[in-house]
Amino acid sequence: MAWKDAPILMSVSERTPTGKVGDENKMAFRLAAHLFGGQLTVAICAFLVNLLSSRVMGPSGRGELAFYLQVSYVLGVIGLAGLDRAYPARAALRNTLAVGSSEFRRLVKPSLIMALLSAATIALALDNGSVGALVVAAALALVTFGNCLTGGLRAVCTVASSGRSFLTTSLAAQISLASIATGLSLAGEKSTATWLGAYAICITVPPTIFLWAIKADKSKTAERNPTSLRRIRRLGLALMPSSLASIIATRSDRIMLPWMASYQQLGLYVVVATVCEMAQWPLQAWIDAHAPAWHRAFIAGNLRPFRKMCHVAVLAVPASAAVYLGCRFAVLPLFGDAYSAAANLILPLSAASALLILSRCALGLAVAMGSSTSPLISDTCAMVVAVTAYVLMIPSMGALGAAWGSLLSYCTAAVVSISLCAIHGRRAHSRFVSS
Image (tube, rainbow, N blue to C red; front, side, top):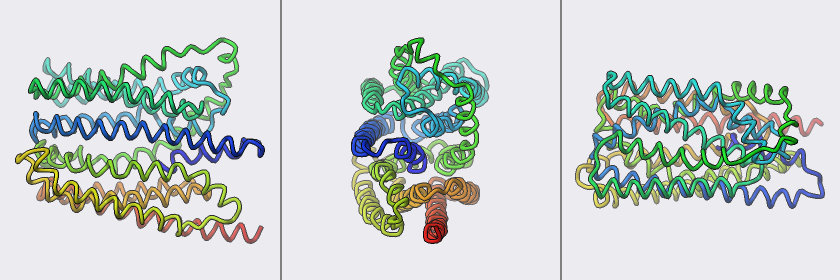
């Protein structure tokens, strides 16, 4: 997210000698390109696996698989405890991959253990402790572990300016997942535990091999500063409420749908929602790549937030329209007649994707201007609206209620974040003029 990477990029400009700014800009551009490449790989594989699993498992089975995946995403946020944002913002830029991986393992161990135990407990409780529940519990814990590994690897590679390592690991994980998913589809496998196990193996093994293969030499390991690590952990805990609010606002629909409607309704919902999410990722990468330039323009007094948001809107609206048209003509041919009811979800979810991108842009600009509270305020408001809308609309409208609830939530996020950006921009401009 834009505000997630802004502290990284801002600290780079502050700690870089003026004679090397051009080199650092090139390095930041390459890093952004590699990170976007990893996201693009995930997007392509997510679409393929979504298509294959949906046709084989049907709406109900696909919904059950989606539910467990959403639980793993939420638990992954708890497992990382904000360290994926705090570590790049506070770690020394001279850190190598070896030192970074060693430090991050020390930082994340307590919260990661808690997240894995929570994953196993939830899976066992949902399946009443049956033998199959043990398999699901192990798979869910491994998927949660893989999500934490991916977030940690991204943070460590960012600090070390080694985006190629992140891209390579992402390629290995996603290619293996796509291959196994193709095999399961050809075999007609409908078991949720089997598909969840495929996710667990593919997203856990490549980053595990990469991170544990890196050996920190003793001289650099001795340079660790325990006080610095404690500060990083405290910062991560301070950032964690914002991360939780964001994940609840964007993922609670898929967790509440099975409880308040059915797995079938979630299966219909996730088919369209997954495609709409992919339209956000290129624009999110564009926002992240421009964050350092926004910060430098703000320092120079040349930042025009409204103009930047107009630029993003010009890109977001056509992207949302393209997703709408693509889904409208592709859902039935690709996924089959069982997903015909998903056509009603396309309009609200495609509109919601454009609003979400606008809110991310506004928050990225606010962080570039020095606001540290805007993400928490915006995400908290969106979370409250989302949960309220889902509770009121899902029981009577099912997946359609979740879709319109998401639109309301993202509309709230856009209005609040743009307002906060404007307010902070005026205050920052006044301080700049007075100084």
